[in-house]
Figure (cartoon, rainbow, N blue to C red):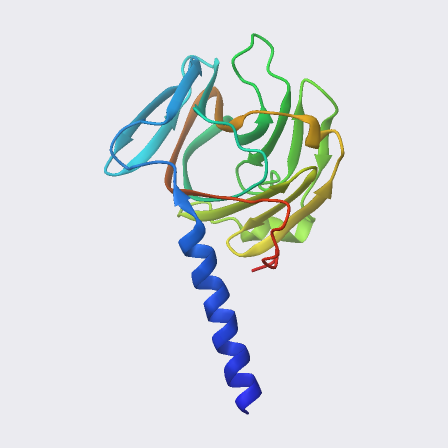
Length: 207
């Protein structure tokens, strides 16, 4: 009985440690720390980051600093999504032709949490079909993305979506970037937090 009690306390401690180590990268007031590229519309409303497409063109909002190994978490709500939305990593978006990797955020039954390589090999890893039901199409969802070198893991609302490794991903450099593309795309984000990881990171990747 005592062993179960202390095991429970240890699990709670790990969860609290993970939460404390994650630092906000969006202040809920303005776009300090972020840079815009392309034609997206990005603004803050009621403490949320609102992401909208403009005339079907492509737009990016990226952190001013690069992140190599990190654990990212954020909440999103799909207001309108007739187009593309996602979060890029290890990708330079300050170029005319953006090449790199993103975690897809899509309507129900369209692979939210999957990994896609833009201007490259295309779809790299799809989520299992049974995991499509984990998306809340009319409410807030929590996405978590962990990237260590070429190892990428995604979770949606606490459920493991993909666990994928690719040495090519490890060679990329860039910030954490949100993408909009399409005629009617409007997604809200909040609680965007990042924990930077080093090579000695030992926290269980499934917490």
